[in-house]
Amino acid sequence: QEWVGEIRDSLVYARANGGLRRLDVALGTGGWCTGPLMSVVESVIKAPVKIWDPTESMRLETPLPTNGGGPVGPSLAIAIGLALRKLS
Image (cartoon, rainbow, N blue to C red; front, side, top):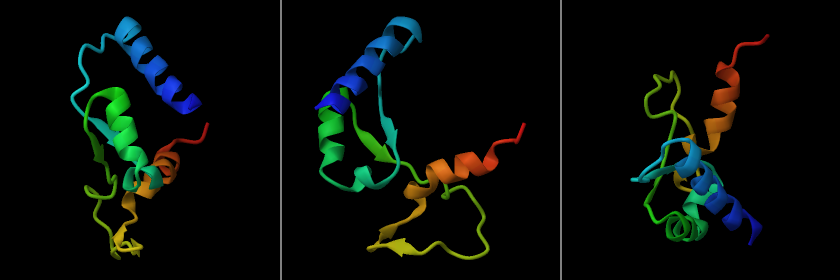
């Protein structure tokens, strides 16, 4: 699949140009982290994938709802990042 090649290419680039020597863990967000794709990504990158919830370190007035029994926070990473950007 094309996205597998893109992950591999990104790691090759990071090792060649970014100084990445070893990948200890990858942080994943979004819906793909809860399904079978997580193990595919782990086998491609040869490192564990940890689900990252950007809301864990936030003080929220109201608790976030769950999404099918799981936390909804990992699905909010892009939205939170965009909300934190400064408008230019």
